[in-house]
Length: 150
Image (cartoon, rainbow, N blue to C red):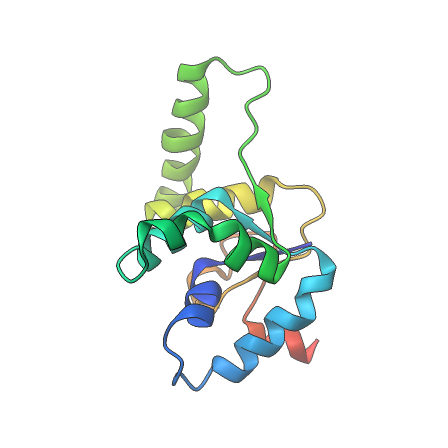
């Protein structure tokens, strides 16, 4: 499975003159049959960005124009065996703070990466900001362009 970062999907819906657009579009079409995934944090970040330009009704239809269009699975954090307070402390404080301390990483990036690392069968994390993640995870970190080269 490939986990896709927010910037790849943002580019699909905005910045149409960006020189990376062709590689981005090709990557999304190549990866679609392979069950790509996004974290719930990626999804919420993207919808928040797009909310400035979409009606509330259109935004609410995201499963049609986003999830179905790209065949995306959504990764959620595991809660098994954790009390509510323990879950929030672990998911939103301890684990992200550890990444922030060790790797000088923004909060939302640490949430996304932790969840991608936790999911079974992830072969790569694909982002246009690969340099922000390289050396900070055991996952292969690739740009859409380098994914296509492989």
